[in-house]
Image (cartoon, helix red, strand yellow):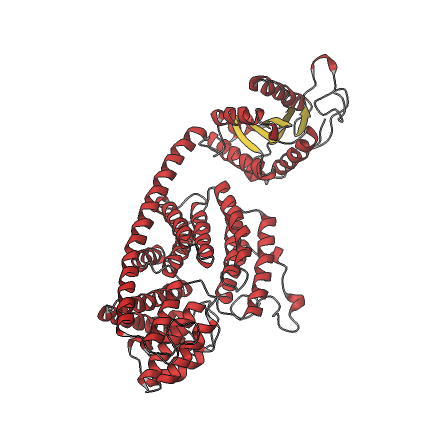
Length: 595
């Protein structure tokens, strides 16, 4: 294993080590998560060719986690693959399908923190698409979920919970910072810091400090635009002190870095914070070098402005204008932080830059007093709009919270508290809806009963029995098709509705469930198996009639030894519902097959 306990990025295995590199299937879940975190840190500060290699590696990790099927692991890897595309030029649109999948997956498995994270990343995607109001709504949804996500759940330990909470909050913060809603952004990033203050490692501490530096610099530049220079200076000085504080944790973080070289010599925004706090020629050489390196577009603007002010302090005003105009040209298509583009244009106007054919000024002209007055009034109006944005965010956040609360109450009335599946009441409603829908026909209905469940309660305990029911419910649901509905019917019985599935197709889907439960580790299932009675809804058939036929078919599977699927024979000795299948006198098929 290479130094540091991790393998190089995809495509960078040193000569002679390829054969010794372990397969992903041999690595632990914790290793996969750690590797994804490392790759995400790298992709944000890499050239495009390297970014594409990182994305390829993350896609391999996602494929491996999907093969394993552990819900939290899959959600984390969906986040990583989507985020890598969001930060890679030209690939943001590819993130949309991954985020939709992440939202569906986290809803299905009740992963509140990661569902909030999916909404936050959708907000980031919407900012890139210049849909700022929609982005604000996504952040309101994310924060409403996080407001109600207090404490850990049964699937996570305290440290893992805190890390996921902090990650979701930081993704919310990024969008608020991009939109220039700095007061709300500060509240969110402070909450993110609070979440991991007791368990944060060097990378988390570095991330928090660097994020706050970026926010403070953007905030300070925004304050300058409305003439609040004292407040702006305070933001710059605070950012500079944080840039100094980041040195120690940065040396042990996951960020790509040169060993033994101070962070301020490697990270543009850290160097910019020192320069904006006290512009002088001493910063110029360092800023020029960092200005030429790869980074986020809005970070590049901050470094450019800092460099221009140091050049101005050195009496090199024309050079400062050239640097700013070059940055304006290269960042023209960047939508990630609209406010930063205005900061760049303002800096050019402040230095009296001549027009370049895209400015409203004539060549070699400087802003007139009236134009400057107009710009000042416009800035003041834009500043007041941020208060409206904050109010909008808070209103939507409360609306989302109340909607979720109402939905939770409704869901509780329709949900089995033990397994989280729809209950009998919900089943009746869904069955009525599907029975009357032409699009759902043919509709297969299955009654599933656990073989050997009574022995679990008798030989172990009812608590063990409850655990088995939860495991079987989850396995049954995950093995079926996405549109299939699994409900708890009562006791150890479940009902499955398979819309648009003839009995033959339903048999294939249910066979996966039968096999999956039979192959569960014994310490999880205590050896229970499934007996399934499968029928197809007949025209004009009432719900109680189709369920009664499914129940009869299930007992037929029981009589034949269980651990199998049986279709119900019709009255008078006719063929089973699946006319292509064998008749009732044939011997039973093996595990999971249609009898």
